[in-house]
Length: 521
Image (tube, rainbow, N blue to C red; front, side):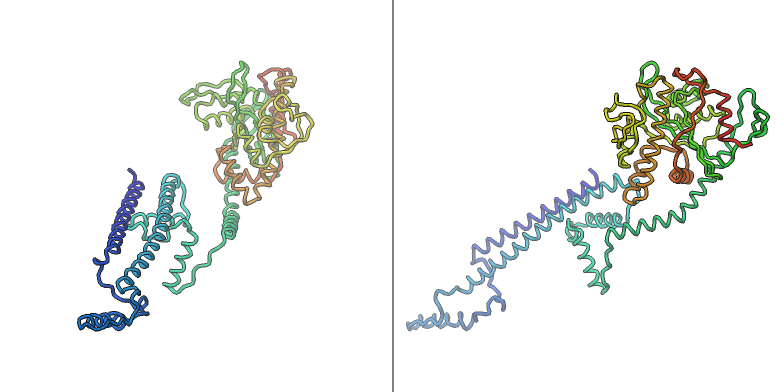
């Protein structure tokens, strides 16, 4: 039995004993009322017997009556013979007093039951604090409430804390009034909840302005430095790499140290070539940002693009390098999510000859519907006919996507596409279009104090990033400030590969593209 259950049992026992004692007292008083001879002589009270004088009006006339009877004289009664006798008056007085006392008892019993219910609720709250509140810091109000409940429950008299009633607001005002009478100080003015929330928001904003700028700059420097240290010079045949530089067609190129390369991709289900469903990386983009020129580039990487991908066994041990689809590198990255995410990033980096990846942001593609509803839906023009999945997704139509429609729009390939490459390219365009609309709605929602916190919490649950807090703050703010390009840069593919499920990059064209985007002469 837990401590809480023991406290409840002790309270029930105390209530039972008190009720038993009360019933015994009532039975004793009823017996005295029914047997007047057993009652003690009443003590007249001025408030109840002001209308008679017992000696002059009762005892003295009765004594004279007895003397007249002994002498045989005619008895004269100076009082009303039918008037209530003193003992009868006392009995009636006691009955009235008993009724008042019982009325008070009933009121106290009613209050006690209310207190008992409040105490039970308080015990439940205390248990909830102990079970669910252990992982977070309690507020001052919760700490005070918890301490008060523990004191009330530990007291032998469970009703010593009479203010512990369901009407907590009235109880607090009562305590403040008692404190004012005891100390002579005026009660503290209670702030309205709305003003308190506004004050907290102002304080948080001020703190973010003071400390957020420092985190922002720290994140920027950290990302740039990690990029510089991660540069691994590789070159295809016909090009050279030496001394931290690449030589190609008689020109020397150096990596642009001002670049930050953010990898964004989703993880969802797809159907493989043999018809089985598997988890794979999809919607793969490189968001490259030049901190000096403030220029951004968005490079779209097809999930079916072939690259050198590491393969890990069930013990997360490296086995070998394999030439396979980048999307499938998620499944071959071992058994842990972090290892799989890193495996996708490594495969993309290998495709671009060791391009440094500053960090990655992973989106749970199965939660797109919830994220869509979170920002209030995305309005866009449908780029491809997807009526085989949803009758409303007609090419060229302007539509406000529901959660289910958004999930179809960014996850499903068009059946009417001419080839696998065309289906993949069409899906990438739709994903970019949706991501642009989502970032716009997210930016608007983040400006609202009431919605910003809920949006951040939803994003925290549905996304993952390997970046530290300062780095993530910098990247998040930068992405919110800079709109994505309407047209992403496509990775050049070899001629004739468009109809194949294994899409291979044109290495010469890809190397020239890489030099243009990430290097300087």
